[in-house]
Length: 220
Image 1 (cartoon, one colour):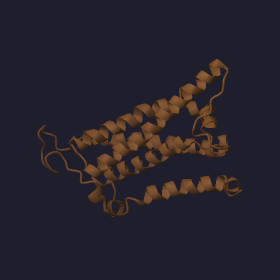
Image 2: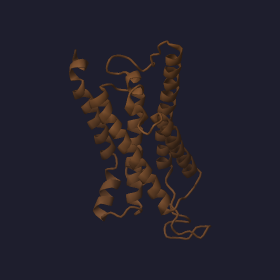
Image 3: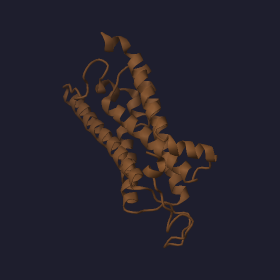
Image 4: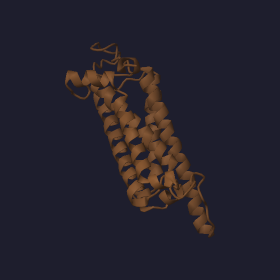
């Protein structure tokens, strides 16, 4: 599948034509791209929601003097509880998943709007790209902390990482392809043809890091 098939992004009234609101710069997207935003946003939202609920249960257990083990705490390595109780789980002074509830929800809303035919100006697309860049950068920081500082994995966090990587990759490809982000024609053609390479290699690299980090545990 080429990027043209994935993302047939019409401008308002057609590329280069003036739309009903007199805006020559408004740009929409293809159905597949909009669905990608809805699906990845929903996946991240689900992860943030589950982690938030488990965080509340952990806090309730502490107040009551009891213990609570999240369902995704399967063994010493796959231990969501260790992640939730770490300092990194509240990097901005409040639980990280609360940020996810807002941001992933916004992505779902944008995807639904595009499915309904919405078109956005260049600054909006750049803002979405900046937001997903922040999101993927934060996820990579959390990944490093999880693997090499905390020493545990959270399956719901892993889902959020994958969703954010796919989201950022395709928003960037969309913006490069539609000249929202300036790029040489050769790069634009390469991204359009091999749009799947970056997210596949990226996610695969994370999988290899996880495998090698706990190789002795997985093979014992």
